[in-house]
View: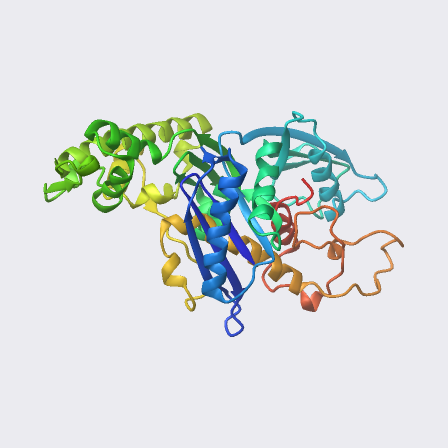
Length: 448
């Protein structure tokens, strides 16, 4: 499986496999390239983006010794929108009990909700269910009732932005087919958030080059999504403007000496920057560099804080805020974030993969999305392997042509997936039918 993080400043490609000894995801190849042809997470030049993607894929293939054939890609950008909808279905009175099939029908109804012609659905996230007026139902399956309702968060994105991702990947490597496109902060959650954090309440903040993506989790599901049209590129631009140096040198300064919290900066050393076109080098105090970076990062964090407040979940984040993205490599960002946000802060390091292979290479916030994409794809493939061929129904109370809850393939988000039956012995231990169904929903709807 190929995981592709197509960002504003960089392209990350990971080629992965399943470790036969441990059953864990293993990284075989890593490819990175400088991104080109994107603005704030959206592709603006097909040829340039395809060339950058091709470079990253080639590097990953060379390192792994494998050819990529299918890819799972991330999507971000301020074109991403969220709308909460309410949907209702009736349950036949002679049955009077909610089944998996009923919940699937309800989600399918939500997928038909009219949206702008220039938008496509990326994800559908159920928030809560209501059975015969009883609200705050987490697991409606098996409950008695004749009326099922749900509040559902529908995540959409520009059709052109979504289609251009597939187009660029195909142009970069015609042998690679895009299998799925998912929201980047949702992908990152697989690699840097635990289930406990998602349940108690946590905000995932990915400070990318062009945008800052925010995803809030509570009770195990995404409750809020927001994309702020500012990112790490502004830090580089500020250094270039204030210090009057070329952009490449500004980027090097930021990466090599970047600190964004003056109170914690120790040595105020003198830095030298090469002059332009043979001119004498410039000397810059590190304290000045820090002041410039702190001012902009403080502004970005204030935007984040405002978004958390507007979400209504600011005081419900029991696990605080987890940061990912290249800008989180700046020294002092955790101290500054705690000061601005007034809550606990952690830098998210990807986990959940086999310790063998190239695991140490991706233990870095810049790989949070690509590792998360790989884990999402791995989870889908694992789900496939757990499905066994359909057996003849033995339950006399199930009518011919009607599916029991055990006949749903929970491993994918496509509502048109072939349904197969698992014997009780083959079900994953410790994983309830409801948990499997939630995973089915979370794994996105491939048909959109």
